[in-house]
Image (cartoon, rainbow, N blue to C red; front, side, top):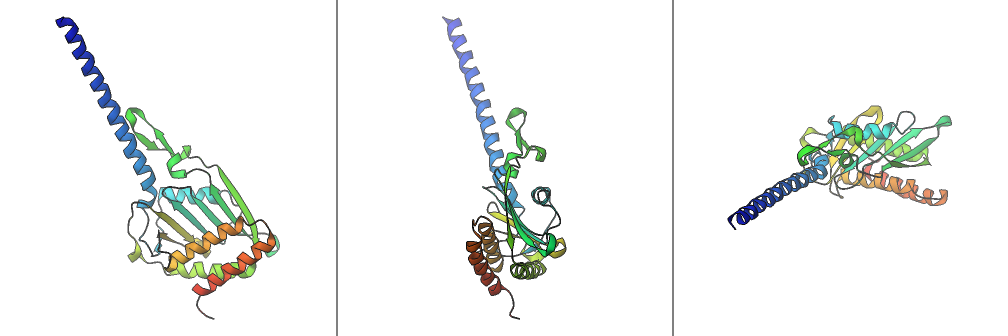
Length: 236
């Protein structure tokens, strides 16, 4: 009888120990998952403002992944790094005969999250080489008039970037605006009524423009985008 009770106690302790290890492993995995999604935005600047870009491995990794998919040097660019969704970017390129195209690259999986690999003891570590870079590309022609306005505005906003705008956040979306000469400014989840927020809205409209199926519809949308650009540009 005593032997049977002792055996039951030993089994109970073994189950308890296994449960403790499993719970600890789950807690570590959950913490890693939280850091996985919060990580990209922690490096982002303050809401509403534009700060000069700082080089960091994640944002540079996404930008280089987009740039490798674009032939030639971009005249200007934009990249979005959401905490809970896939990254995407837009680049304007010059083709032969002074033709200009808008090229939008959208990743199907988060480059940040998909690079995490499970290690022993329930820990996770990010390996950029393992990131899933499956993507879709949409390319459309744009007019020199749209390019001219867009270039002026991006150059203007990048030139106005200030170190005083740099802060940190726990979630949201970080953005980079890339101007002539590869100068760069960044913003983190700007309010919609602020200049940086309105510039983000313009690039969101350009993303939608790249998905517009017919040239007639694109001409209407392009005209609307130019009106929004004119509202942010100084009067001539």
